[in-house]
Length: 124
Image (tube, rainbow, N blue to C red; front, top):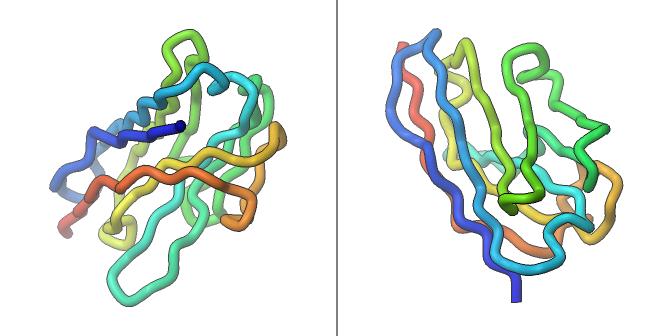
């Protein structure tokens, strides 16, 4: 019913920028909060950023606050993650996810649909 496709990942040097895109298929995209998560090798999947259904509220992990920006374009069924000043510790697979609710949540249990992920590698 709902499909999420991430793109925009790649291999970059520390200090550079990347813009991830999540394209959602479905007619109810506008009614749900969205989030970005990441998972590094040997670690659990953690929240990166979340955005409410209308885009008025955003939440960020402390490790990316001030460097990453989440946004959405409901007319295009698309959510973005602008990543600036990338660090080697940002290296991970990044996942786009749709929440069950309209409020931006940092709890992965609140998300019911997930993309397959896009790899981001940052070298020093």
